[in-house]
Image (tube, rainbow, N blue to C red; front, side):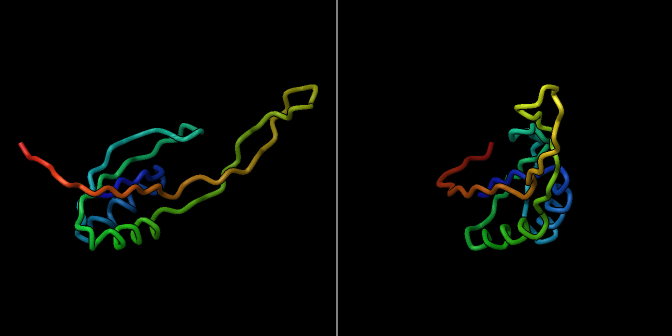
Length: 104
């Protein structure tokens, strides 16, 4: 099982690409990171021999981008914000081995 946290800008493309490859991915809305940006968590259940295929799809559909946030200057007499570049996006992927599961 893979758990992938994907930025909101990339979620539609990533989810559709996984489904086109025949991989089942359940989508859960989430918010996180130090900027509190919207994202989604994908739960992808697949055989171990297809893990790399799923990671390759996520690598090609989820990209990092540079955005600017306003950070106040520390030594300025007035609180003048300075645009500071930060890198956001991409995907964070966790791999889990499932030893047992039950369906009801």
